[in-house]
Length: 286
Image 1: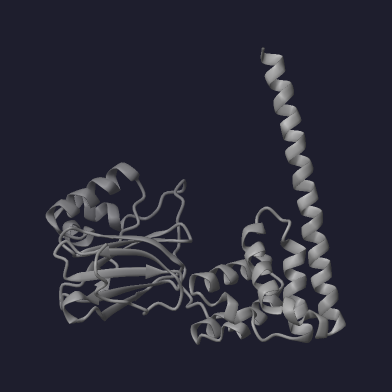
Image 2 (image 1 turned 180 degrees about the vertical axis):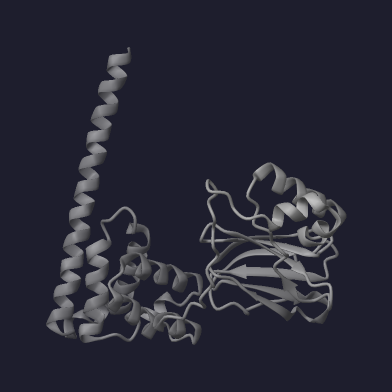
């Protein structure tokens, strides 16, 4: 039960995580569009701040005092953002120090964390830590140089998806020829309840490409779940019009039918074999 108080549609792709601040006055949301949004609950969930990440956002959590946000990304990285002291609203990445020795470096960082100071602030008070941070690397050190991050350009199908041109986005991504990317697009359209819109009103070669793609991968265990959903939608949309449809489209649907029938026969044979094998194993154990 419960009454819906708001419906938020501020992300370009599926929302993967939602966290509220301890006081309940702020709501953080993250999604596959690589964005974390901060909503003000008292202002009708208005977006008051946006944090853009380098990869898809899969998880996030907020410190009890609301001053820090930890964000888990699809790239495997965890980004921590801290509320800026100057204004109290903006979140920035806290100061970082590249440490050479784990024990010595973490000791300084832990002490700084307990006092609410950055490593650089602590270094001004402790000569040993200051010398450590300013020391040159040894011959056996592994020096990691952080390259300047390049802002990723949106691909054509992502731009079409953001502008809600679902059919054009699916056509564009199929033309790329990358199966995982096409499947990801189909799953994203399912989350948006827009898969049927993307598949409808197709004809000729445009429809043949979609049907052929489904037929090629419907028997693949990695993609069969989503491919069966797409196949059922295609039949619902176009089966009644097949007698008046162009021959290439009919041939594609017939090929899809043969592939599905062959897969069903194989599954039945495997189930029979499994039953026989189970009977033999049970008999051998008695």
